[in-house]
Every structure is written in C-alpha cells, then in structure tokens.
Length: 519
Image (cartoon, rainbow, N blue to C red):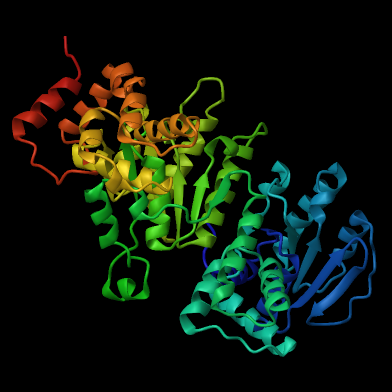
C-alpha cells in the first residue's frame, strides 16, 4: 500500500543509488511526479542529468547538464537516443504505456535495462496504467506514487489563496476538516474543488467543507468498487443496540491527535453478525455520523475482472484509495457472499480474499472496517480472529424495550407522534419481529390510513398489518435458531445485552460439537 509521499523520494533515491536501470511509476499525476523526480535529482545528486521525453515535444532537459540536443519523437528512435545521454542520467518517458506492448519497444527496453547495469543511467516510465507487460515487469522496480497528503494540500491551498488575493475565513478546526475532506483527491482535483468554492462564495470558510465532500463524492463515483455515502443515520435513528452504541461512544475520539499522544492505536474495525433485518447496514451508517467520518462502501463484486491479475489490482487500488481518504469507515456489506469461494474462478476469489485479510491485519492507516454478515457458516475462521477486528457483535432479535424504541423511531420518521400510540402493546405484539419488519408494518399501516381519506394512523392499524405478516423468526425458524445458538455459545458479544460469562461446561460442549470425529 502507498505510504506517505516522502517514502517515494526515499525509495526513488535508493533505487537510483543502487543503479536500478528501469523504474515504472504508476500514477495519474504526471506533472506532480515529474516535479518530485527532478527534486530528488537536484537534492541528492546535483550532477545527475534529468531528461523528460514525450511523443509531441521530444526530449527536454529539466535538471543537470544541458548538453543533450536530440529531439526524436518516435519511441524506438527515442530509446536509441537514450544511449547518448550522460552516464549519470535519469530519463523520464511519458505515456510510454501506449508503446510498450510493441515487440520491438519491449525488446529495446529490456536491452537497455540490461546494458545500463554497468553505468548510472536509469529509465523512469511514468504511466497511469497498472498493466505492465510481463517482460518489462521482471526487469523493473514498480513504485505506486501516492496522492497528496494533508501538508501538500494545505500548502497548495495557501498558494491558491495568495495568487487569487482571497482572504480565507477558515477557523483552525475548519481548515483541518477542509483538508481532511480533500484527502484522496489528486492535487489537480483538490485545486479545482478549492477554486470552485472560491469562485462561488468569493472566499473559503467553514461552511464550504460540504462542497469539498460533494466534489470528492463525484470523484469516487469513478471507482467501481467504492461508493461514498453521506451521513444519513444518527444514533437516535437506530433503536436499541445499547451495548454496541456504548462501545462506539468510548472510541468516538479514537482518531484524534489526543488519542495518538496518549498512546492509543486507531481501532481496526468490528464485525456485525446476526439475523437479517436487525440493523447491521444501518449501524455502519450510524458509525459514520457518530464519529463524523466519511463512509465508503466496498462493493466486492465490482473488484472481480475478467483479465488475469485485474481483480487483485482493483482490490489494491480500492484499498489504497480508502487509505488515502482515511480516517474513514470502510463498510463491507454481506462479506460472506462477496467471498464465496468457487472452483471455476482459478482461485481469484481466494487471492482477493487473502489480499483483504492481509491488509486488515497489517494496515496502519486509520481505516475502520465494518463487515456485516448473515450466514456465519460461510465465514472462514481466519476472518474473525482477533487482530483483524476489535470486536465481533451479534445483532439478535430485538427485546421488548428495543421494539418499543424502534416503533418510536419509525413513527417519528413519518411525522407521527409516538406518545399517541400504545407502544407497550406494539412492543408486546411484535415479539419475534426484526427492525426491518417493524418498519414495514408502520409503512403498511400508513398506506391503509392514507387510502381511507388520509386519516391519522392508529395503533390498531399497525397491529392489523402486523398480523398479516409472517416474521423471519417464523418463516426461517431453523436458521434463526442456529444463529442464536451461535451467540449462546459465547462466540460473540451481544449488541444489546451486557456480556455474560460462559460457564466452562458451555465452552466444552461447543468445542465437542466441532471436534473431529475419530474412528
């Protein structure tokens, strides 16, 4: 995964000093990376010549000795002219992914990479393409150039304000949030977003943070695998789950500088497992609102491509983008379906799954993973072990008190006054119903009242609609019972009830049930 940008300068300098002859830098930010390469040459070795080439302008010396006059615009001829450069030279080739699938070009690059081992010439290919030909990949060092960090975005904002003559009205906290909102953008995308705000408002202030977030949402829409969610659900909109809410509130300041100074690591994530309709997806949205962090939904189905290596590359790019935007919430919905291993994909799903597991274990960026699942049996044990998640919560059938609260939430959402309803009776009659089913009974009752001259909905309407429903706890009795038995064995923490101690005999029974049957 890409680290902070100073790592790029360090890695490039080490590669140049080690006489690496071919480097492929993958980035859409050509102007920015060429500037960094020039800075490395000028800082670490002022005598090193740095030359850039493209198919329109040919060669241009951007650092060091100016005694290079070749102007070839044909890629093969340009590679021939590379041999005329100083022995201590860095040659930057732009847009070369357009030519490197030609057999002659591939052969010439390989010849040069082998010949240059005995001098200090290095070819650097700057490309947005992640598909490096196999023949070149073996010869090259590949470096992924990261998006700009907070310091660079802040400096670019200062430059923009000074050149435009605009005075910022940002508070210190507002500026931090504005820069955080721009993380994950390229420098040009961030500059355009800042400029649009300045042109629209005549200044830039704390109220413009949402405009930057909206621009980033549009940019993320170009990523097939990541979907940006706006804050939509507050803790008050989620009924029950008091234990889970308390756990989250304890970590509300986990991503602040104060927490880092105290020595606390950023939380890794949680797994939400349980009965369908109990609010797992709703909880992911609630966490983003509670912690005031961007919410990204990882569409694992969109990670898979038809070309060899494409799925792994899409996975790497999606996780790298999530790290660039961090701190953030990364929501992986119904993870058991996303990584259902099949025998017909040549092991692609297993490799993608392994890549995600490794990232979850080793990531240092503050990306809080929220994984939801309904089918416990489909989850591999290595996913749920400690180190990848801070806690595993089970969302059970709501209790009487939770059902009352859920009714109140959905009545308020639909402009009804909860005090006008018999919530005790509704809570009693809805035993065995999950939150999604309770919401639907309220909606059905409102349709009934609406079609009777738009009269006010009543408790009787809701109870009547409830009795026409068959809840999941009845239609899927065996599945629900198996899920609740999993919780009873002490394998997860209840999201609603305080933890209880599982007696040793209970754990022994659970282990015996899963022990191998010996002959």
